[in-house]
Image 1 (tube, rainbow, N blue to C red):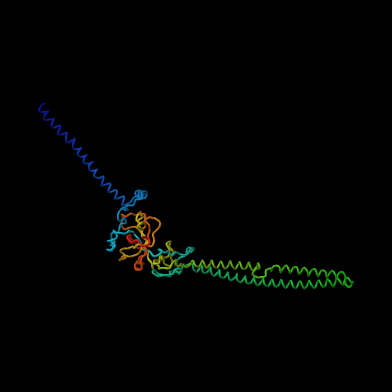
Image 2 (cartoon, rainbow, N blue to C red):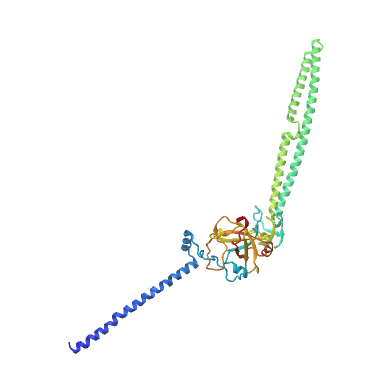
Length: 407
């Protein structure tokens, strides 16, 4: 081997090694980085999916019956800005079921709507103010159709008076006609009796030749006319066969017309009631939605509620409702209250529905299945909660307390 060949071979080998091995090292490192990114991408996708809960993921939870966070000790996220009282904070994770709740009057809020058939009427006057206590049936507002409806009542009252006068006149007319028919019949019978006597006398005189045939024929004609007059008077009196005046056909017709006028007046008076807005319950006016001159809105003119007894509507996850019993003590807390409210479970719902109250935590489950539990607050708590209708609070039901009825 020559020196030229010896010097060329090592150079060729050395020059080719970097060209072969360098790309392999770069390719190996790039694949290694992709493997490290896979867990990061999976974790990020899981977090984004749970946070936004796209329709596909929600469908999966619905089909499988699973709930995000249902396996944790506290499935409902507590709003971080709420500072729980110390005693509640210490016991809430030891025993009890948590749920979001809202404060409400007994029987919930009643929306005062205009009466049925008010049509295009506007609000003319508001007779109450927020905070006023009213009784059921009291007039709380008036509409601007009152004058028109009052005019219809006046017309119906006038028509009724006319029908009453017509009935009295008909009764008097029927009574007089009946008396006239009786008098006419008596007169016709008297004339007929006299004509019958004259005919007998004329027949006797004709037999003795004292009077002519013409005189006898005249007496016979007079007797027939008197008999016909009696039959006519009897037919006239037959129109009044009933012994009572009110049973006469003309009086019955006038009486029916009077009844129709009376019904028309009742309808007009009922229409007049559409001008008044009345309280559907006894309670306190919580909110007024309109001012005079406005059309009544779809959600009613005002809101009322019986705040003498405040309640709380708590939403409990369906997998925890088995721990809740009627009579168990309940604590409720919120920033606006400044204190803890106390109550007891009064009623447990019988249907499972979608969660309606949402936590301030944006990552909390918004499609949970819950059962509503009604809590009756004690007197002291009701007095405090009466100023906070619809306030969202956190409730803890003490499930360690087993009421005697359920033991």
